[in-house]
Length: 468
Image (cartoon, rainbow, N blue to C red; front, side):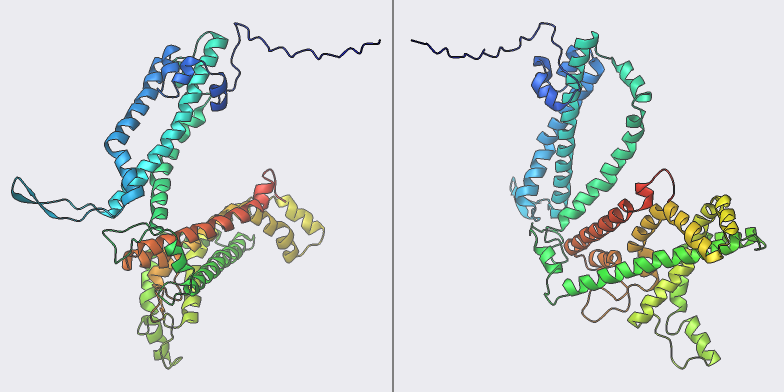
């Protein structure tokens, strides 16, 4: 009988790890979890153990000190602040209690204080989680360098590395720390107000209300804040920002080109005149114009005395007049800045481009459309984006010039109010911080979307090496 022999597959042998096995680089949290030795993994819980064992004494002590400070903060303040942030937030009112038979007034705890301390504790916890990853990577790096080079770098070596090899870390540390403390933390605090009942009726003690404030802004509730008013203010804000940006830009460029022409005399004088106009404080000019354009202001009195008008012109009492007025006054205020911005760029356009255009018989419009304008747009796209953003948030011109007027009866925003001035009125004047926070969030979303889409589709972003 023929016997069939079964083919037996050889068993896969496990790779033996040699005694001189070295953990792989780079030093990431994933590799530290997978290939870290016992000292590295102890460092997951007790910061700096791996560094201390590899004779990185100063670094190990600093890592351990940060952990100790965070634990001390959480035990004394942080844990209670987060607990109140999540579960309480309402705070306590001042009450009369008796201690040893004597009446004592208990201390009142305000909700805004609980919110601030809770947000700060949450922020510090997020920062500590990030620092934990730094500690883990540092522990694994010390292990790796000890295994490959025989020693981990000392504190002096790290200082020299920060001075030379990683100078960007030392140079950017303070700016990033400032952004985190003075920008990100207040921003988180402001965003959190949008989910509370922090308004004029609940200024001392308020609670979490979820998305109720967003529903108020985005619904037709017939109150002082509703979707129709929000869309009206948003539309006017975008219209204002468009005209305030591009009218200033093109008119300022035109004046700068006229001054820059070879046939223009006294160029330095004209540039000096516009430079002097910038030296006048903007708020002074706006307040003067606000006074002059009143129904009984200098402009209306002068026009009536000349017989040109019978009644006062409605500069700030009619919606259309008011909107045109703030745009025109903004031109007077903003064009000198644009002239100073674009003059240097105009002078640096390669002259050989114009000489070649002259040889081809191009007229002034063709040279402007095919040489000057493309070059200016390419160079000044970031400037235009920042200017547009600044005009969306242009509080000074609107608030000091028109004050948002005219304001319809029963409305919280005037016909010339921008989102930023509306936010100011809701918070400072009416103390409705929750609705103001919602408006602030929507303003941020609008600016972020417009800025990112515009910049990412511009030639300045797609072709940084030259102009199209």
